[in-house]
Length: 120
Image 1 (cartoon, one colour):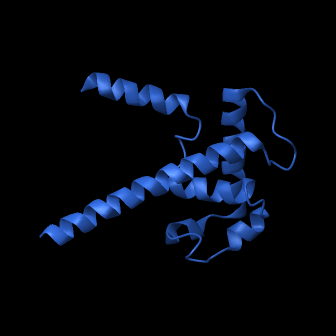
Image 2 (cartoon, helix red, strand yellow):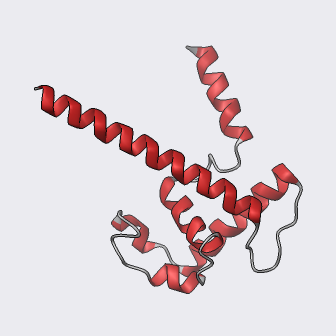
């Protein structure tokens, strides 16, 4: 049990994106991959884009701080400097991969829940 916890902790520290919640990753993905302006993201209240209402409380400054935190973590891990507008191929790839994993785990969880519901 303790060994598993240590391994999980090591894995978390290796992955620069592990420190972000799924919602924060969605915001960052919007910024890096779709390259929308931060104010557009902050003002976006489309439930299709952001399912959780808690994300709507994010202000422009909070989003900027998330972006700088991500930049710092990526620079620390990969040693690559990001360009001025913050669009970096490494960041985009990592975010896309992380969001796909999150979506897959959500899908699997819902399938399991459906299977349980059907079997009852």
